[in-house]
Amino acid sequence: MLYAYALVAAAAALIIWRMLLPADLRLNRRYLARFLRDSAGKGPSKLRLAKIPLWLSGADNEEFVCYHVEAEFHDGSRQQATVQILYPLESLQREREQQQKPHMAEDFNAMQNPTRLGGPSTPQDDAARFKEDPLRELTAERKLIAQKTEQFDREIEQLRLLQSCGDFFPRLIAYDRTRHIAVLTAVGSKRLDTTLHACPRDSRLPLLQDALVRLAVFHASCGNLALSLPDPSSHAAPAIRSQIAGTLAFLVSAGEMPKDGELTPLLDSTAPIWSAGANYTGVRLADASPRALYVHNGTVSPLNYGQLKLGITLLDVVELLCDPAVPLTPEEEIAL
Image 1: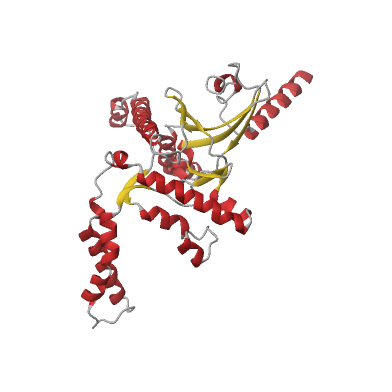
Image 2: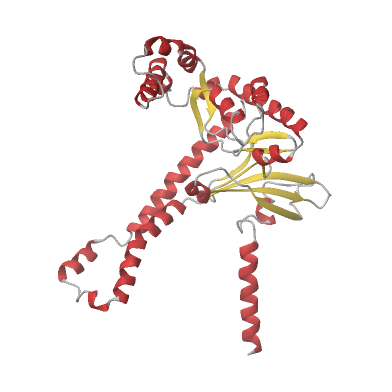
């Protein structure tokens, strides 16, 4: 009986330890020693890992998980890194769970009301089950893993190209394709939005100014990378002009503008907007929200290197500075 209690206590301790563990079990000292070593070539003696709060949708937040790693070595040195892990089957698992919910509800209702239980299965039911591919789910998993791996490959290749466009994004240290793990230089675990609200007011402008300078360098040096992105047909001047005209028509129908007013002069006056949209086209951040940028050692960096777009490059600047999470006055926004 004593042994049984000991086993139960050990199992409970193991479960609690696993729940509190802030990382994938593969991120141990032995594994990270392949990529992080001191001057003598030895791996870390201690590891501390903190999960990075990603600004992603619920689906992506389960597929991509990032950790900030702090490694200490026997010689007293320290290294920091960002580890990104892809779990390629998370989306498929969610889809299966959604499909199972109606069946679970039907089973529950049948148990509550046994009179609704069906009779014995018919030969047609047995034949339909026999025709089902017994390896269908395994085949779907293999296809999805291959698809997600190819996507991760493309993003890693894009990160390699970004390394020639300044130091705005983290640099690639290693890519373990079989385990879907990428090791990058550290971006930290502090988001820009929380940092801006925590730091003194006189520190906000220098921090944002440095981020904008590095973002401008990134914009100016990504000409070759822009050629590999899709054609920005949606940002052509006629398309932008048409979108503005549609907005004006909506304002008229909503009663916000007089119906007898002439819209053509007003539309022509917006020429700087749609002409700028056609002229200032290049690589831009798909999400320049301060929730998607991270602060590490006073430097602001984005982590989502796989979601660059070809569009109006000034939009990411506007998105960053005009975000409600950035505590700036209108005068400070204009100055920046």
